Amino acid sequence: MKKELLEKIISEIKSVKIAVLGDFCLDAYWFIDESKSEISIETGQLTRPVKQQRYSLGGAGNVTNNITAMGVKDVRAFGVLGPDPFGTEMVKVMKQNGINPKNLIIQEKDWSTHVYTKPYIGDSEQNRIDFGNFNILSKQTADKLIGSLEAEIPEVDIIIINQQVLSGIHTEYFRSQITKVIQRFPNKIFIADSRNYSASYKGAYRKMNDLEAAILGGFKKDTDDVVLYSEVKEAAINLYKKFGKPLFITRGARGSIIVNENGVTNIDGLMIISKVDPVGAGDSYLAGAASALAAGYSLEIAAEIGSYVAGVTVQKLFQTGTASPEEILNIGTDPDFVYSPELAEDMRHAKYWNNSEIEVINEWVQPLNIKHAIFDHDGTISTLREGWEHIMQPMMMKAILGNQFQDADEALYHKVYSRVVDFIDKTTGIQTLVQMKGLVELVKEFGLVPVDQILDEFGYKEIYNDELLKMVREREAKLSRGELSIEDFTLKNAVLLLEKLYKAGVKLYLASGTDEVDVKNEARIMGYDHLFEGGIYGAVGDVTKEAKKIVLDRILNTIGDSKNGQVAAFGDGPVEIRETRKRGGLTIGIASNEMKRHSLNESKRSRLIKAGADIVIPDFSQLPKLLELLNIEE
Image (cartoon, rainbow, N blue to C red; front, side):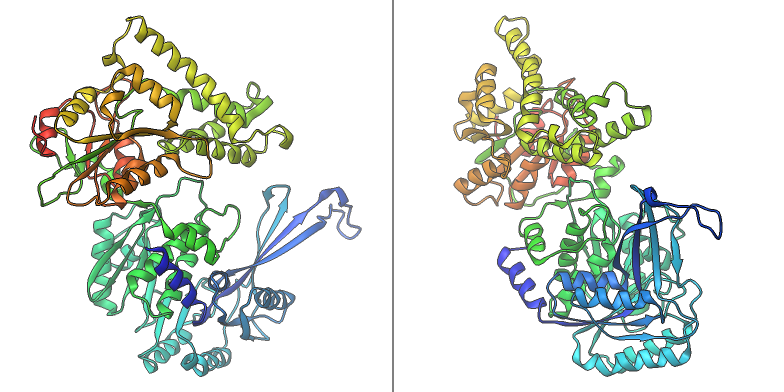
């Protein structure tokens, strides 16, 4: 989405009016300090003194909180509270967050404010104490609440119906009466997000997750089953036929789909490399989508806004996060999407060109006419740095564990190991300095190193580079002495491909995340630096900027039009694939096994397809067929 359009949407949703009808809950965090514990005279048991307490909105309250955080000024809460201090606290928190609580009705009997009380001792959450599990909504309260909503429906732009708990407001009687209200206002958009009663609320749009949609659409699924795209698509079509109203179906990291009279539309998920916490993501998505709908935007745009809001909140750990207008603008102006996740994760669906090892992900109609080719270096052409992960991984573990590196127990050691391996896998292909900035956060996350001993990203990069360059220099020395040849440190037929493209008049560019001085030196030692007439580019040490992304922007801006098959990018990392795809260029993912210098690396294949590769090859061993596919004459 263009920045101007996103800014316009964010500005316009501030003036919409949204009603949220649902199960409003309160999350209570009680932090116990046992240093002040004493023996109770009455019971003889140790007391649990609460040093601090914190309250935040949950359930429908989290939806309203997300909406106001986006800048919406008029958000109205419709729900039921108990005659207790927690209800008073909820109203207080709502007012602080800019939510209008005047339509929260107090039921004097058989009702407690829904509260999830979470006592903490240190960082450990104790047994939760819940209030509201035995609530019984009276017919009188239901009618009063519905009457309050009905009176204000003409004033608002959209009505969100939230059902969170079985002991909440959504009794059979309440659901039947709300359905009648929906029928009385056919020109108003109602959107229901219900854990247990999605089949109710006739006439409302619906938002649900893929598992809920699959089960409701006729598939037998357990709670931990994966829902395939084909299944959720079929379920979506069935549900639209059944309900006759649009649906939003979320799929976690795989994005979401929408279905209306135009059929099913896929909304790509966001590529997020940091650690995520999905709690509350569905509420965030709903808040974003509903706000955009309220402002008059299409389902497609609403789903995209919902994705951006959820993309912000999932990165806020140990909290039910919200997304500010600035954060939405930041993530949505130049987003990185996840493409074809099912294909990426299941090779059985791969399609190969002309009985070759060349996997074609996206087909094109017009003949290619490649005039410019951008190459990544490490893992695409050169394997001089093969094994960098095995240097980075222990280096990161030592940084995180600090003085405990040798003595850490097995559980802690493997916890750190798993976290580091996952981080390296997700960040492969981005600037080393950015990876080191991520390491700083990992060190802080585990909290095993004193704050005054934590280095910055530049300090950690220096340690890593020193170790990596020892290996690279040893390999360069063997090349210089003739003990090893160029073929020992390049992918199969990589240099031959460069020469073929060069002779065919294709202008070549080398874009690397390695420091620029090093990549130029390595290309010179390997003997192919002269082929890159477009230039050799690398990182310049600015962590606030993604070196390879900046390089690619510069190259693509210089080239101009990337469409019509004139620009191709070859790479084994996601950055060059993503950025070239955004500009409409052809993307060739190199899923290389750097140790063998040929054969397929399945992890790379998955990563490259998700980044947007049009073609995936393991190496350049089938060069004649590749050149034929690329319409390059030998």
